[in-house]
Length: 117
Length: 113
Image (spheres, rainbow over the protein chains, first blue to last red):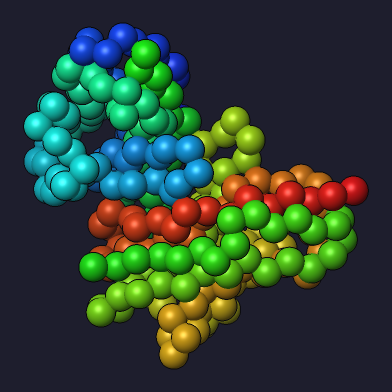
């Protein structure tokens, strides 16, 4: 169990550029979630997947945002035409429908900090 | 829709003193409740969770939280804090278990030597 990994850890970009983040969940975790956290706030839900199917998208996810999870393994989150308001920490989490101690537990990655200049 | 209120944004406390971090939620359905901790420069880690059964749940490092359905609360407590408990604490709810979490704004616990 190597944990959830996210790349890159930091991204600085200019307004208007496109960026893509990657999340590798814990192997065999069938659910994968994306959240966004801004300074002084708790994480806010963006979208989530069960295997390769995107189950729900938040109203926060404008049409400039797109997420994929091909083959139900890693996931990517792309932001097109970035704006300064997109500056935040983007968090990925994964979970497994299981019993015992892992039941309903979401395991979080370290996050990708995006700064839009 | 669910929502979570953490009434205190910052809580300073002296080492070895007790602490309570408050969390209230609103939901029209039964929920599952979680406390996550975020240490400086680290990711979110699960501290404890309430799914069902006993309303008092405990973590391995001495924290405990009690689910109070009538008051819609899930306050986090520790009888004696350590410097290493300094962190941001987030309360969260989920209506369906393996569904997206709704987080509060967090409480920054600062333990003073």
